[in-house]
Image 1 (tube, helix red, strand yellow):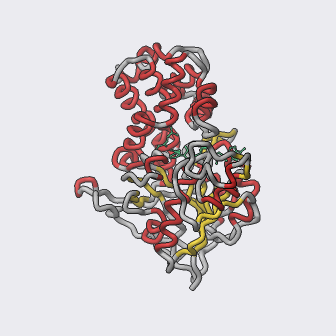
Image 2: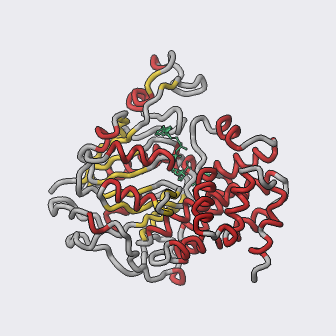
Image 3: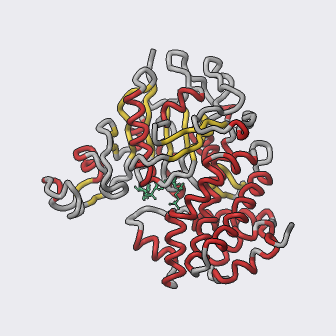
Length: 413
Ligand code: NAD
Ligand code: 13P
């Protein structure tokens, strides 16, 4: 039987980390996956820093192509410095080449770059490939608000699930324990590929009282999907889990693709609000208050606009929900940059440029995208925290106004 070839589309801080996780697993589960993992790198030139353990390498004299550095020294010096990558991660500058022959495509890019990446992949991928989107963001257009899992699926004619969790990349790269949620609900026509139904009792840390029925979520993706040929190992929850689960990275499989995708996208707006109040020196109670309203608005957003599929439990019980909100509001980039922007009285874009060495904030653009969608729906007043973050980014309000702007939400019950 044939084995699954896996490609990672993206090579930033999280993209490189997930390539490491996957490459460890493809090596370990050679009965299901081909060991080599191609990682698409948006090519650029980079110099090995003087404090790197590779500073004495002959490649350290001047700028080199990032792909050459990764393939020669097995480190992504720019986006994941100091972390040794497995040698079966192969950096590839040509996106079509990276995806060639892959039956599993992992999308892991800042959300502003995904449309172009999909354009470049159209007609060049295996037609029965399956995707997983690790992207935290939503795609807002004239037609409405779309999940990246859905829009990738539509653009490429494949089925695409989602991975999201309380996952600060650097911690996972250092193999510090964390959990994640993978939403995967493949088409029923893959008859040799049944998705196990029932509770996702997948992690040793499950508590009985948290077990719930995981009903499959209807998605609009399934009509155009080609069945996976029977010579491949089936891609049900058990095998998908093997691609991501590590002793330090525990995976829970669910079917609520919309809930998983939205949790990760919307918490980035909340993390900006947490950074704003922390930057004012207002303390943990203020931060907890914006987090409470933030999770409430995230659930409301899901239940209002993705009513047929989102489950509240995805937000309250899975890593991709409240746990991601907590970690992101503690040490995420959106939180840290928003806090510095208030402390220094500078625009957040300037802090992003100065602090992140090319990494991209997702919360600022998501705040604008969600706001423009809410305005079209005439519902911005129903989401006072999301609206307040937009208004502060636009300089129409100050972070000090947050309590007042949340008044309808906090006084509600
Ligand atoms: P990042 O913030 O490190 O961004 C850098 C990446 O963007 C690099 O791969 C760079 O090559 C690429 N890039 C820059 N300009 C580009 C262009 N014009 N076209 C295409 N690519 C370009 O990226 P990341 O941290 O890997 O984030 C990817 C996604 O994962 C985001 O949606 C993010 O929210 C999510 N995420 C990140 C983390 C984290 O801790 N970093 C954790 C979980 C989820
Ligand atoms: P930031 O992009 O704000 O760093 O958040 C990372 C993340 O998504 C943690 O789960």
